[in-house]
Image (cartoon, rainbow, N blue to C red; front, side, top):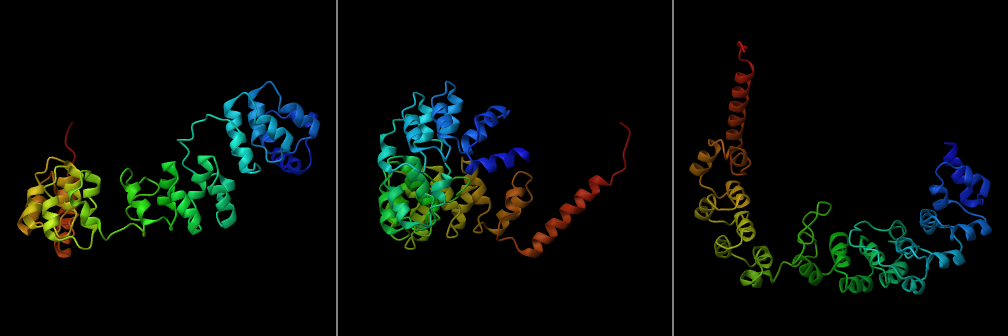
Length: 326
């Protein structure tokens, strides 16, 4: 608590050298606290890169010393400097850095805090740094001109984040993102379940060479049971899986897909409400398929109750048997 109070005090009041040297772990002070000009000028040239790296994130650092760290010989220090909110975009573009930004999947906090500021979003959407543009793309809503700029960004992760997070993402870009992305753990279903994702006109992809695009054909309101039947025989398992999930699937195709070589296609067929009752009954009584078949939505509620009661009785019978000798 004393350490936290000390740091809070020295955010506004410059921390003296004697206090800094007494801290057992000075990193947080270097990252957060105000420093006297002469101490700051000395530390940005410290021989320890860890000291300079901590200072590079310090929001109170003077412009002259930010410029020193922007020329630091360590690339990872320059990579911290280039993301500072107090740089102009011209200054940012002048900082040379080679750090890989490919793994960054969360927005910069200072950019996120500006998501409601349309002018800030316009300025930052034109940033030379992809992490800043990616952070802009994470906004829930953006001005139309910003959306248009980001939708055409050369960094396709910007487009991905726009598809996942922004309710204003355009249909054409969402369709393009679908060609190479079908959702993450944090944003399952995007871009396909985005409210702006196109539906009309998707049937033209039924004969596309790319199976990912053929999967979309059945989302078209103009698609028919005949299209479902055709795609249920597609050479790609993912397309057959999409057909197996379609409520328009013919009973004969549902039965046929029970023997599909792909497990997830067979599982979808087991859950199909189009399965004939006698086939579904057999699946419910088969130990290998019962756990999937029990989720079939066409099973009448009274039948489910009877199955659950029978299962509970069987379990009770096993657990209540008297113990026998080892």
